[in-house]
Picture (cartoon, rainbow, N blue to C red):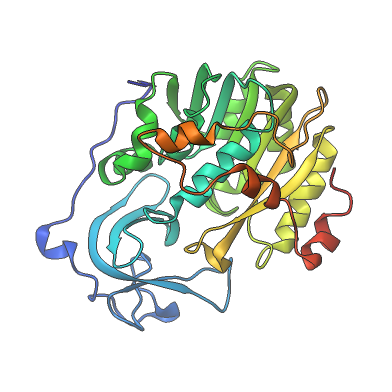
Length: 334
């Protein structure tokens, strides 16, 4: 089992008479219930993702049953059974993963960086409390040490209880969990410690905001070895081009190797896609578009958990940008 530096907090279940209360939401401003759990009052029994991060639109999923609702020190947490995407994890009214499409995010955010460098040994994950990135990092046999820093222990506990196929990543003996702030954690990391750092963050509001700012990127670069790589969640080209331009500008100032934007499709994320910033420090050159450390796809398909989304062709294709995005962030990319 992984070495965990914190005692798990208990996961509280709702009373039986509340668990399936998907139609008890009230008409309130913005179409949400007063507790802010995203249950739509416009269509009772549906979850609607409404946020200032994507104004004027909402994606809705039909709720079969609410499995868990709780409030941690940092955020509201909900798990519900949907009719089409399996179980769904929601933080502060925003979908983090669903059983059906989590593979498109977890596999890409992990294998885009780790397949781009030879023989990665030490990997740090910031965020990613659900354990999915850990699960994917574990596919790389060269990796000897996997550290994860997640700010919210309740996310870890809830994921282990309701998403065991995702949280299975915690069972790898190479994993060490630290519950705490990722920014503070990085400040104490020795220079050049990691071959790869993967930042699986939520949107740049609330506790994740610092993970999108220049001082954080500078700390990441310092913690990476020469030619080490960063992969961080980098929002949607359909919704957040201004945020992406800022991220690209910051990364080009901090990282003296390669700086690239890639993307993948995730149906339950706003606009149906999500992007990643991939950066390398000065040192051995890194060509993210043409991986030098490909996964053995035949072996992965024979494993207990075969790859569902990632392959070498989609790796290279993910760096192809539509023209409107290429004009904004593409021309100077290495």
